[in-house]
Length: 402
Image 1 (tube, rainbow, N blue to C red):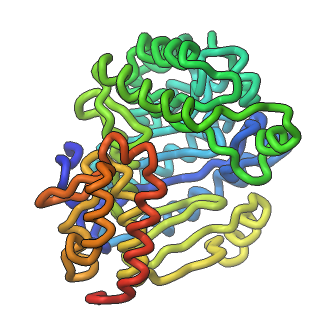
Image 2 (image 1 turned 180 degrees about the horizontal axis):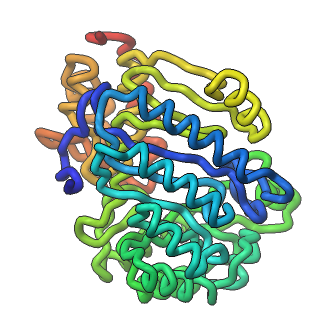
Image 3 (image 1 turned 90 degrees about the vertical axis):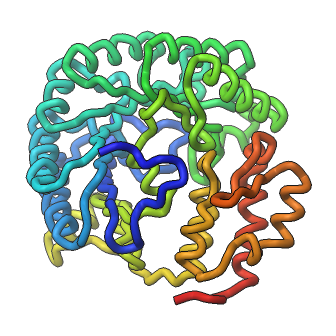
């Protein structure tokens, strides 16, 4: 299976192809900036979690009418699981995938959790791609983020993965870290590129509520980067990575040719997906569900009733159009006019004529026969552009919905 060409539509709301996401919420320690649902391993029972992840996985896979095209095991840090537990989980994924032909099977890892034996467990379990959270190659910046690994751990981890059969590797980096400069950012990008990953993600640091880093900012213990520096660092990454052969295909993601993250493309193109595990979200057809974000409660609910859904909702066409704006505009290819028309039976160039004319006039958007896309300048204010179109979408209500 090949990645869909730019502009291709990822199937209907019901038939897929589907992405499968499995959330393993365990970490050795909680990073200062992280607001994803995760807990430190401590004395927690990894075997019980894996047992119920496998149970939910089998149940969810039986519900879908289409093909599972990608698998992504994230967290947390899935590779903190004991090798036997990780092997059981990956083995169940392989059983569920019987009859499917996934194009990509990714597992997230931190450099400090990778060794040769665990890498072989990943390969045996069918994993084809590993996403490593490098985040920075500066010791001072890693200390601010409270990462457990050091910069010198990254290269050996990449080598270990490759030596044991993982040929596709992605590296994640963060910009906008307190104390970061254009020079330290350029060095982190250079060192990442030198390791030859097929994929590099560059995320702007976000101060999420109820994280240690946000509390430190509020106490004035750290000084956030100013907005202009953050914008400069972003454009620096775009240009430096382009010079190194990495094409930007999404606001924060860059890849060698044909090496985009196919799983994330399903999200960004509004395809359906299955979520398994504590806090996981899934959408099957127009129904979206969310699992409880608590390990103990997840285990209890799975044991008592066979699922751990905390909430479920039916998405109407207006809600789906809003999500299309928020997700597809992140892609350099932009918002698909055909997809919008499928949802509302209306041409978004007419629906959004007034804000589109204004945003195009400001040089923030382009409009073609197939897509509405952010310009280079528009990507710097993407949230504001999306908010304006979402506001226009709300004003339209359910016009043409079905």
